[in-house]
Image 1 (cartoon, rainbow, N blue to C red):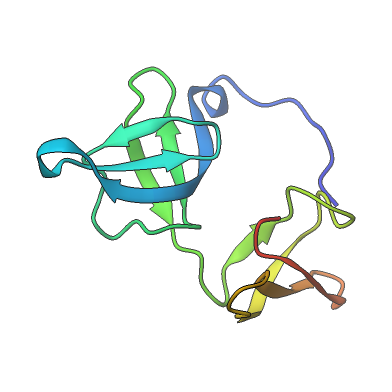
Image 2 (image 1 turned 60 degrees about the vertical axis):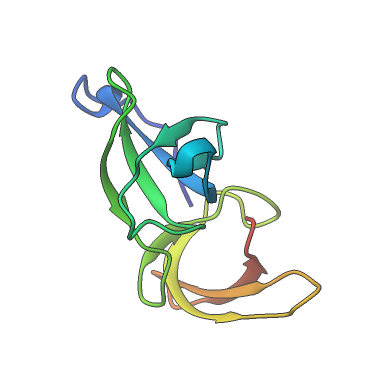
Length: 117
């Protein structure tokens, strides 16, 4: 599980943001909305919903991004498994309901959680 620790001055300059919405605004301007309600205009076209972006706090620009895909490392941010870190094994899609993501942690335990977590 995640443990609270001090961060360096270099780590304090950026923030990890989960992409909640990708759309186009007026005059066909592409934008995305992150979990903390930041709106970033003209993002990289490869960034999709559920991906994670590294946002520079000083400029508000995206410096890099991480795709939400099988085999990627993830951390649970809500629910009973809060703070658990593991590798995404697979994603079960349930149209009209909650999608389920199966994750395997470093100890070899597998668990399932909702996609929103």
